[in-house]
Image 1 (cartoon, rainbow, N blue to C red):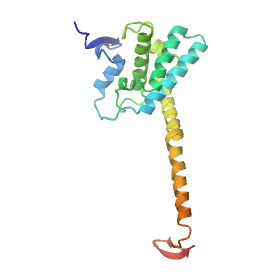
Image 2: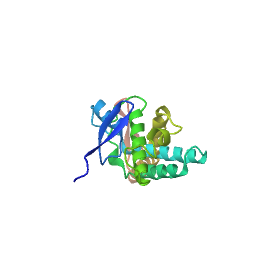
Image 3: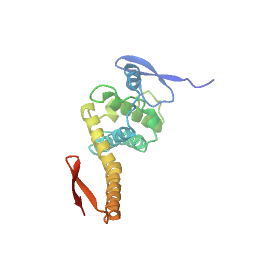
Image 4: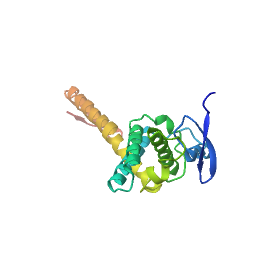
Length: 198
C-alpha cells in the first residue's frame, strides 16, 4: 500500500487537503487557492529573513522562559534549515497577497512547525507538540514580522550584493580613468561642444 498523496490540515475555516510531502499547512494551502494571480514567488531573501526572525523569536522566548526548551530548540533547528535554504521548495506563495504579508508569515510558521514536529518524532499536520501560532509565532504579529523580514532581506542584499557590485564598478571606473588619462576630451554642455578637457 502506498503512502497517501495528501494529508488533512485544519484552521479556523475547517479542513483542507495538503500534499503529504509538503511542510506548509492549511493557511498557505488556502492562499494558493485564493491568490491565483501572477507567478512571482516570494524571493529567497525574504524566505531566509523570515527564518532569521523565527529563529530569533524562539531563542528570545526560550531565554524569557516563555517557550519550552525542547520545542524551542526544534523550532530553532527548523528555522535554521529555512535560513540555509534547505526548505525553499516549501514556500510556494506568490508575492501577491494581503498587505501585511500574513500568508507568507503563516507559510513560515507552518513549515517550521511541521518540520519541528518531524524532528521531535511527531505527526506532520497534527500541530503537536509544536503549534504554528502558539509556538512558532509566539510574541509576533504579521504586521511586524513581515516588515522586519523585508528590512533584513534588504540589509543582506545591500551588504552581499549591492556594495560588492559598487566596489567593483568603482574599481573599473578608476581603471578606465587611469587608462584614458592621457587622452584629451572635448567638454560638452547643453548638448554642444564646449572646451577641451585635459
